[in-house]
Image (cartoon, rainbow, N blue to C red; front, side, top):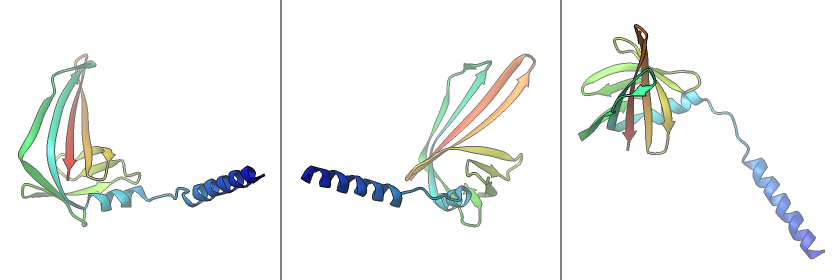
Length: 140
């Protein structure tokens, strides 16, 4: 009988914790905009080209000294004295920069101290499909 009391108390505790930790919807666009605000060191840039599903060697650039970029609260991206506007889509998955030409980057992941942006451009030359991929790794 005593064991049954402990089992019931344990189950009620688990149910109470589960109920209190239920997920609430978050406005992803607003979250991403607030998360990005501040200075972010650009640690590495990886460029690769894929032709007909065959990848060429990756070109990795590690910035020394570290190239610091800034995302401002008024939605400006500043890098090396050049500033461009940016917008985040409604789902918070892509960032569109107002550079010439416009470019849309996919947010690969967001973590506490780092995030990664990926830009992909496909072109068809004759029978060949060429994909150009640029990955930028930002870490605090």
